[in-house]
Image 1 (cartoon, helix red, strand yellow):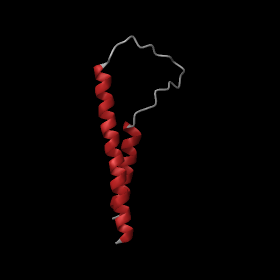
Image 2 (cartoon, one colour):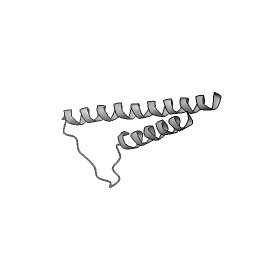
Image 3 (cartoon, one colour):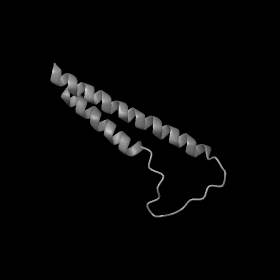
Image 4 (cartoon, one colour):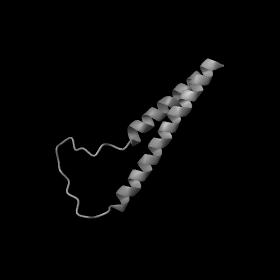
Length: 73
């Protein structure tokens, strides 16, 4: 059970690392101007990343439960 829990935790952490939404801060100091437009593709991508990062969080929770059950049983 512990091995399965660790594997799920690892998968969840990697998923959140890859698909977590980045902060809206430019590291290069670049300022982006918005011209009252809505980019539908960007909204779709953001929803996809949010869903996948939540799956990663769920994997972390299930992995924790597997580890807990491994110690209790």
